[in-house]
Image 1 (cartoon, rainbow, N blue to C red):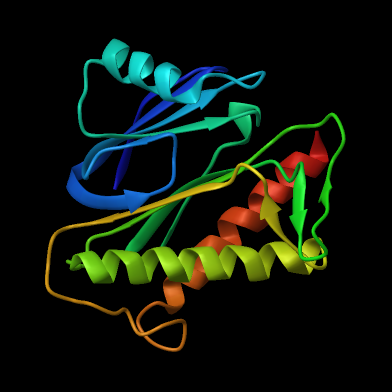
Image 2: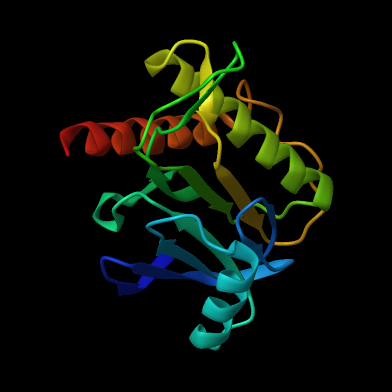
Length: 195
């Protein structure tokens, strides 16, 4: 469950229903997260210092912070089964299998946060991260052949601490994850193209 605390053109702050274990690649992430933050940036920034300053200004410790050039009115929230997620999708500059990076002056990112109430071990969190990343690449490549994302993508996942090591891939209990990531990416791409 996500509760929207702040939504402005420059900042979105969401509160999770509980403090969850987390792993990921956003600019700032605690081992446990209770809040997920999207900050709009308009240029390259000293992301480590900017993320620390933002965390301090919010007065919260258990955060995942994503920076994006995507307009925050394009943020997407969705649920599927026992999984819920948030994303911003700005497909520039593209990262492609031929080694190219395409997109010119337009900047964006593909930032995805997925959480579940299914208790997972650390290995289970990494398995969820893997499933989200693989699904993102497949869905994205359907729209941009041979491309898997952008040069600044970030993904984070969170769940209660538990013993489950594997979700079983998209053929089993993780099928809703695939549907959720597809929904987030495709909705985000539509919002991007409509601008």
